[in-house]
Length: 148
Image: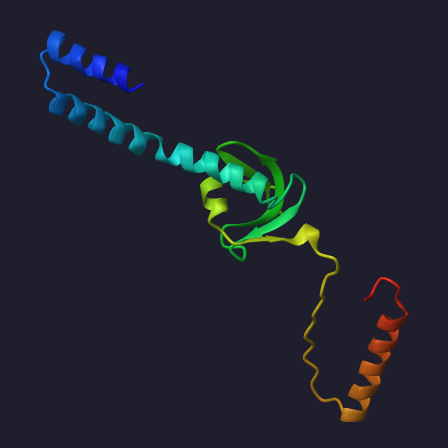
């Protein structure tokens, strides 16, 4: 490998009239340009790898990225460059995989149970009536086999 590199450098010096420093400068500039051009593409490929290796989500699951700031939807398709999400209003969001790899992913589909929390504002009711109402709600929930 080193021998091939030396031969290429000597060929450039002799036939192209370039010095070794100019050749290395040219190759370094080309390398830097290519890295800058393909930076996003490479980041998205690594993001796709992170999605599959860490098993963040699969197609058909409901996920939330950064507490819904990026997306809160069902995964429709995972691609090399981006992932398509189907929002609840039936629109499609396409998010680059590099963004997903650096986001906080909350996978709602992998929950064992769900918490439901309601707040009711009730004015003008006595404490005894409120206790009676709460006992009735607790009784209904305790009899339901689907409530944990």
